[in-house]
Length: 141
Image (cartoon, rainbow, N blue to C red; front, side):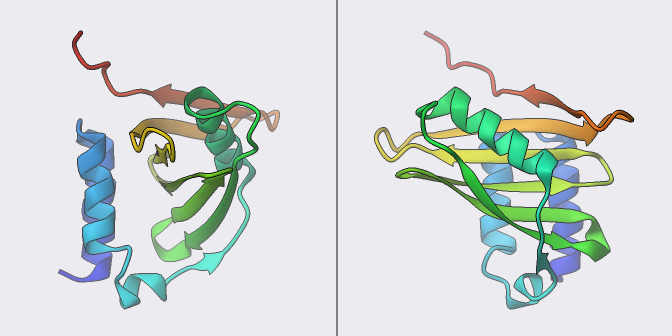
């Protein structure tokens, strides 16, 4: 499969999959180190995705730590991906414009646990950022 094929497969997995960890593993296993994939995009800012990342970091990590994100946009696929840094914590994000869906993964440097948020995000006609997060089910007690 080509990088283009893997991008399409990741988008499909994001839209219908239930295992958020599987989505992240697919991204790392098939795209994150692919020279073809890495050469497709250009750095760009996105206020919607920055707001989503900061909201997820506030929920899962130390709310006093400011989360920053460095984003790359692959125009051909309407895909965004990037790295997240929030103090000593890290994470990643990918998002598809066509479905307005993405996944944020945050790793705590303290617990080493990875937290996931699948989300839908877009700008309203008034310019407000609208997000609809979907958190994975809580583990049974």
